[in-house]
Length: 366
Image (tube, rainbow, N blue to C red; front, side, top):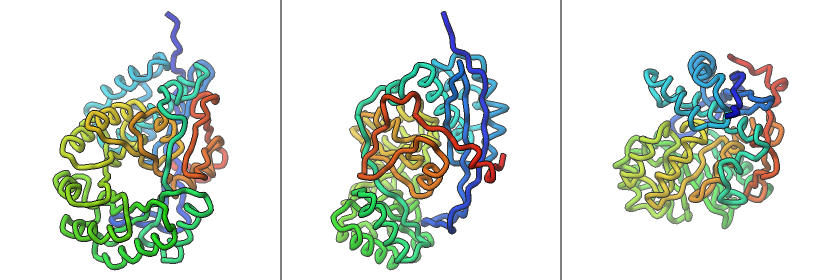
């Protein structure tokens, strides 16, 4: 039997400063680190990445790569399982899963390029395109900055859905949160309005805020409490009119299984750069489908689009401002979110993207 052995696995990290500090309800940051992986087989090179920490690079080179080098690139699930066995004693959640995700995505891209098909074709398309929402609205933005960003999403790029951050200072400025929601509604008119508290509220705060969000027709309330508080999420789901969403910190299938079994969400979020890549994404989406739930892609929009169109029960994907900034600047073949939907080209091999490595060199940190 002919095989297509994996010849090399290379990882690099790039820390890219944000234009200004960015904040949500529980965190502030001034840079974003992209860990990019290239997998080569039969003259084809696949690209994957995660948004994590530069410490993923030695983990990929010294732990994950030896598990797959020389093995057939076309059997991606088998390669994933080999890496999963290799990291058993390191612990799956967190950076280990981010590193695994980046390699898995690069494997799918390489396999698709070897076969001369699109990643979405190799996964099996369920849709021709995927809906998306504009995401940003950081809590440290001024009212003017917030309104300008929303105008760009909804009016300039014609995206009919937008999400802003609330829960500033862990719920200590609820009046400001609600004023920003009102301002957002005023700017976007009849477009769908979503909010994300990043786990910043207590259960009581979240209940009260959820009631007040109703008057602004907010349809999506993400992480109103910590995503670890499954009982709290389920409690809010029973009373809130907005859909309750969480799951972005899912690093393995068991996490998603617990969240779904607890009745914690109306829509399960999955981050392809954290969950274990395209391989684990598909299993998590199936867990949600078994419970009659849709899934939504968290961040990394240009990677998420390709698995989104291959997922029958997908609702939409998040076009996150910070990642959009990086991916549009440093990737050839990045998708355009204008109009609120993206359609990965089924005629382009792989996911059709290439990293502008030379442009990223000033930011290299591995």
